[in-house]
Length: 404
Image 1 (spheres, helix red, strand yellow):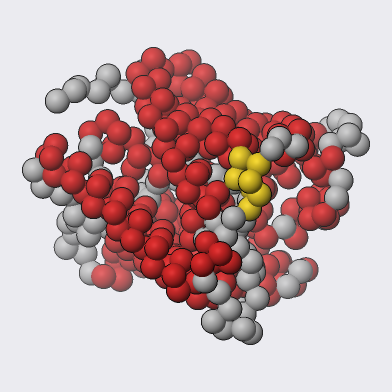
Image 2 (cartoon, rainbow, N blue to C red):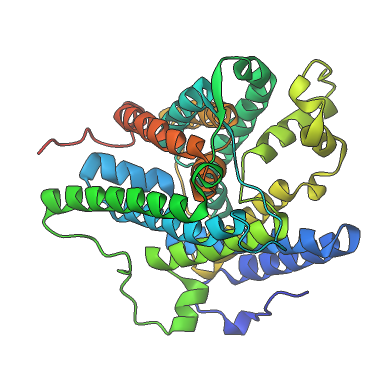
């Protein structure tokens, strides 16, 4: 297994050659280590994570900014890309989860419908607007060299760890249990229904932008005279490329890992491992005492597929940023920005663990595998983002939106 080789001479003048080559070599070394010490499966998932990081960075594919632009300016290109990603992922995943291919074993991202999802996603929505990124956005922005995202991630981990301690109490509240569209309706009917709802939402956000601005921003609208291969390697990508890349890499994750792409479980795992390594008592933390969480806690983080893919996203984004010549931009960190990163990170971590995942593990994975909790997450998370956008001017990020 090997990554495509590159030499300093083959990179454009704008690229950060040292960072690009060191990152590529580091990724290759880690992939070989994973293959040798664990299994080819682990190495493949790490490289898929790297591909996700490259795709996210080059396409600037973030839920946080896409939702913010829709809320503040009625710009819908980000939201339309998200809806297309949900539709494409559903088209790929529903037949597999509906046993059209009996030889493929894969599980849906099912979770109970109840207050934890509603409250957790709402808190996450606020946190993503203050922290500056969602689950995937935090990782790829950090990989791109944004120092502020290191603060957001640190407190994202703290929030996820605290929530993992509280989660059993939240789960004791009444709930409706997991609900699967595929199990209830069959994958054919469920897919048609889901695509119809997504099409309706697409038409709605499209109409909002047309009413405000008269015309739509195109999803394939990156102006560039570069050759296809150069644009693929060095960016930037149109959002449509991001949709295609994330859909296919999500499918690869489902087929190799046996479950859809997820992010936040690893954050709670890292925080709990760190607390335990520092001498903290985790004997009363029941979430980490049974099942897969207990197994993951006892093993190396390199054995945890979600951790591996998170590492891959960071390194993939670092490589993409270096190739684009945009790694580690200068960034001032005034106190209000730092406070927003701390507060936002805590809300991100706590909300994600409470709601069984972030915009990836709950919203994207949930909806694209037929779980109704993903739809509840979408509604609550977007409502939280509306509140978060209103708070942003108090931290010096945006001027108050102008009503028209």
